[in-house]
Image (cartoon, rainbow, N blue to C red; front, side, top):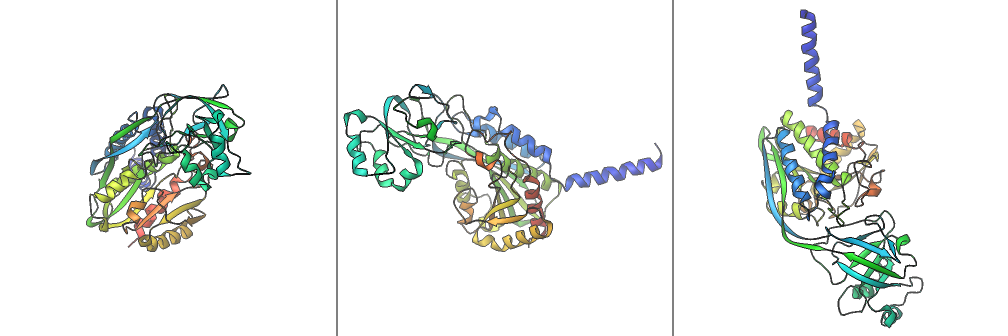
Length: 423
């Protein structure tokens, strides 16, 4: 090897290393999403231990990223689950869980054959409905109605959910395909089962037959995974959050992979941790993968009540949720205290064109930034809405095959550029 060749090789190696240190890692990002959305973790829910398995995987990923410390913060929650039998027939036709129907998260199990009473929504009269339901042919029936109609007439339909109020066995609420599944209010079980079905699956149906189990988990042990990268200064810190739990199972055969929601955000904070472990920051940085978000923000609320560092030391918090999409407009929510920072976000984005624009929505209790925003922490919520993958969130179709990767790099660069300039 000549001296000139050797010098060129050294220069190239240094340039390559510098490029790697200043760039996001798309390959690593994709690998984490693929892993977390695989069958190994069964939708990162609770009944089959998927969430905790994912947490242990993330603990190892943070350690491999070269962070200075990783802590698992335990907490408990109550949650209703559906890990066993999930069989439903409509007029003898076997329906597909997650495609034709799902369960409300607070529903008990249901066994038996039941007549179906279809609510007349065009000429709705609550008194007539209750008179019809008192007839022998509708004893122990399921009352079928469109979800939003029932929501608008919640007083009447609320009676149908309570034991002793009416002789109906349960409710069917229709929701357009793709059918969704939720966990937010699964900390309890109501009196009667509530099945969500597509309009096509229940239209004209006279009887249903069900074998559906629920399992209520009391004081289920979960944990947040917290990684720290030490900065040059320790009096303040930046915090990056994403939830790694998801919806788990709907019966033995169906699980919700949650590639976009929220393996995508979780993967982003792991790669950000790796970046800052290699590029020592000015301030301490914490990367928190929350469990219990889909169970009504239980993990982030627990952390906000038991923070590792005082909340007032947080310079800015970034909550990254469902960025596995391709909308060139980035949706944001910002706390009151975070508005000064949002002005800088917009300035940076206008100058560098990471996204076509930033769409700031009204602050809502819809993800893990909210327990911090309500405690006056400067924070921003980043979620890529209305792209090709967004339609599949909370459905069985949110998989590695439908997740998109276009938003990852601009989110990474926008956050990195912000931290470089924020004072």
